[in-house]
Image 1 (cartoon, rainbow, N blue to C red):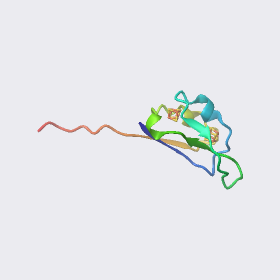
Image 2 (cartoon, helix red, strand yellow):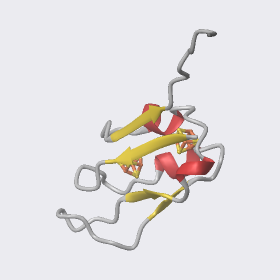
Image 3 (cartoon, protein in one colour):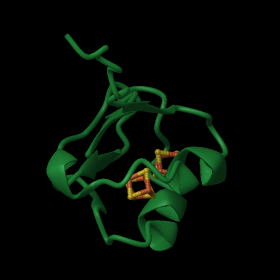
Length: 76
Ligand code: SF4
Ligand code: SF4
């Protein structure tokens, strides 16, 4: 699982991230942003693998991906 954050006001709603997500985990939302455009939204954070393809494809660079880091715990 990874956390995907799309800056709703910078997104132009071009749909590139939607088209390229291998998990079909993004869609164009119904809400208008401050520019009067419909930005992309995440369907399910749980379904995201953190592959970063959406962030790499975005021409506006308005997607951030946060992956959980494994915490290494030393034995007792
Ligand atoms: S990081 Fe990968 S799986 Fe997650 S929303 Fe973006 S393209 Fe889809
Ligand atoms: S690729 Fe970027 S600008 Fe285009 S819909 Fe996705 S988040 Fe918005």
